[in-house]
Length: 193
Image (tube, rainbow, N blue to C red):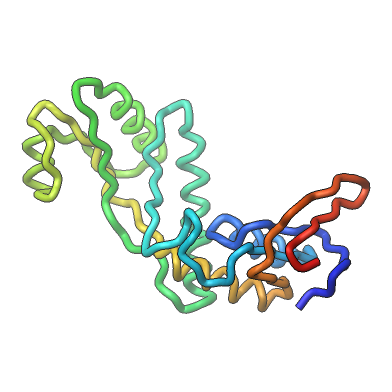
């Protein structure tokens, strides 16, 4: 447990997927890191709780750089799986569907082509054949990217926190940030300290 009034190199507020991943990256680089989470962990009150979250690289061309970022993140997810021995990525196809306006889908398809990922455009009948749970009119078009995944979000948070603590990070859950005072040293006032 961190002592009240301690000075940290970095304080991460929020222990969901993004916060816990950020805290792990910092602690892994030797940054003295405190993570504050307002609720007792684990909990079901955040945006990253639940069974799964999708990861995708089908972005419009103006955001094509995101496909590279996602590919880098997939490598990080795989490293976390290796470190913890926990399966976090579940391969799943990603399907984006549009009605009469398909330029957005074509832009996403060009991004996938640029980064060398297999994909296809499929009309409504083909979508119904390949994905019978989807019910779209025949004039709809879908972009199918077969090489995406779901992340097991709840398990991911537990893995991040485990490795964060192993790397010397400090977690204080059930502690809400109530105020931040700016200055040469930024001060966080919490429900406990």
